[in-house]
Length: 193
Image 1 (tube, rainbow, N blue to C red):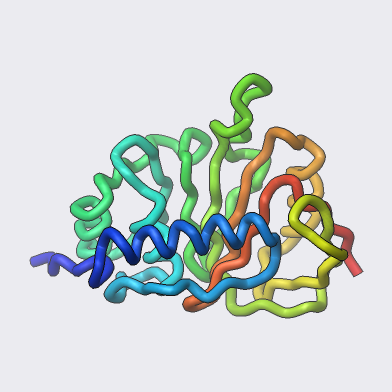
Image 2 (spheres, rainbow, N blue to C red; image 1 turned 180 degrees about the vertical axis):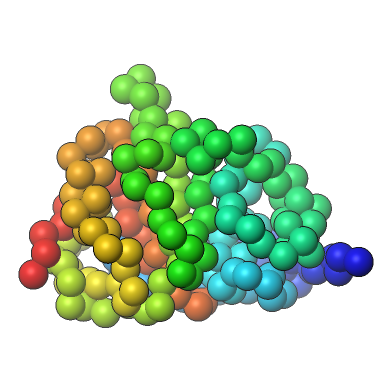
């Protein structure tokens, strides 16, 4: 039998606080933010991933998820109106738990010239953040910022450069580690080294 898990202890205000933290993470790219509220544990997902899903999803968006425990899916469905995407390339949100094989970024929904906002947002769980892989700049940076992802998928930063080259089309990413999130909007330029 599936156990129904609670979402946030204060669903309205906690969700709003997490939504604002997600916006702040995108406004100051690659500057990790600790989420101000976390939901009860959702098996198979990091705390920040669960919080972002509760804050960002509703019945009007589609989500691609890898296999997750039935009670996790039941809780997301109950609290958000979770609608699973029929295919990865149609998903509005793509969730990649730690260790899940990532799809090529170019395979995800990138928006259309008239509607670049109709693109995918990826929630990518990582083993940690560091300052060793890339130097990033662009909108939201007062100065270039060093950043890295422990356990980044092979070729991740090369794929990111290709994604940025499609701007204003492309995907946006939330990099997640435990209770923290770092935004990586498609407008961010990176160079390795």
